[in-house]
Amino acid sequence: MKTDVRQNLLAVLHEARALLALADNDFVWSGWDDRTEGLVELDRFIEHLEHGRPFDRLNLSILFAPTGPIQEVSLSSGWGQEFCDVARRFDEAFAAY
Image 1 (spheres, rainbow, N blue to C red):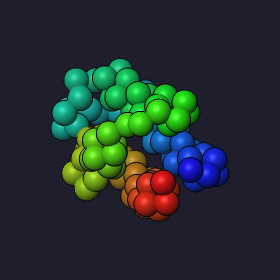
Image 2 (image 1 turned 45 degrees about the vertical axis):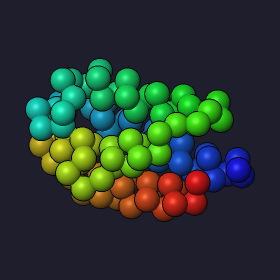
Image 3 (image 1 turned 30 degrees about the horizontal axis):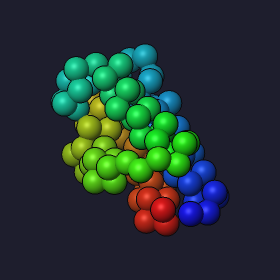
C-alpha cells in the first residue's frame, strides 16, 4: 500500500470529520444520536488508517453513500453540496485504496 494513497483517503476523512463537527449540525435523520456518536465512528476509521490496521471497508463506504449518515447530516444542516464534493473525492480515494 502506497503511503500517498492512504494519505489521500485520510485527508478526505479528516475533511468529512470537520464538516460533521460543525456546531449547528442536525443529526436527527443520520441514525446517530448526536455529533459525538458520528465523530467517534468516523474517528475509529481514521485511527485504523493512521496505524495501518484493517477496517471494515463496507461500513466505511456506507458512511459516504447516498442517503448514508453523513449525507443525511449534510442535507439537514445546509452543506449538501460540500458533501457531494467530499463524497466524490472519497469515492476516488477509496477506489485507489
